[in-house]
Length: 229
Ligand code: ZN
Ligand code: ZN
Image 1: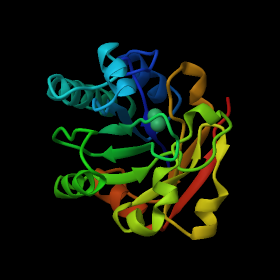
Image 2: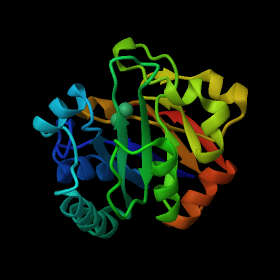
Image 3: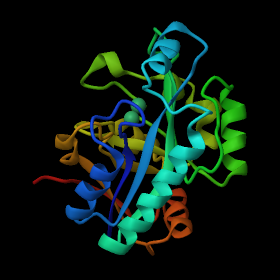
């Protein structure tokens, strides 16, 4: 099965490791597929404006550079490690209340989507680009300051737009996802080197982006594993 991590931050947002070093870290650890998913933060409130000011966000003006750097690294990673690198973002709707906040991975994204758009507009634009839509850390986390509960609380309205939910994020496991029988993946939410050792996804499919998206959407041949050194 393919060893995968679909949720990784670099210095393009709030990660502490440069893109190239991150790719080498995963390549040397034997991963088959990774997605680089730096934050795209909403700028329509104070938290978002601060994040953008301190460059903890990919923005419209550097999005194309970000995607082309990820693609360049992807070519190098395929050549050197046989590892597929998928360009992505984490749309980060941050509000003071965790009930209003949500983070959404868009995998295989091609064009910029602002985090200040409505959920409907974001999901529609992502679908038009053929991107995979993943609800991140959707339930109570061990670090309660990071809780983002909007999509789970409003799942009756939004679940039909969501291709998969994170059933595990780094050290947290969300068993409500399995109770609902939603399609699932597990990711590290990598920000630091030690986050490499965390929950991961295993996929039984070919190592190309279309097979991977299909495998996750259909939720067949998907497993999770706790990756330890
Ligand atoms: Zn997040
Ligand atoms: Zn994240």
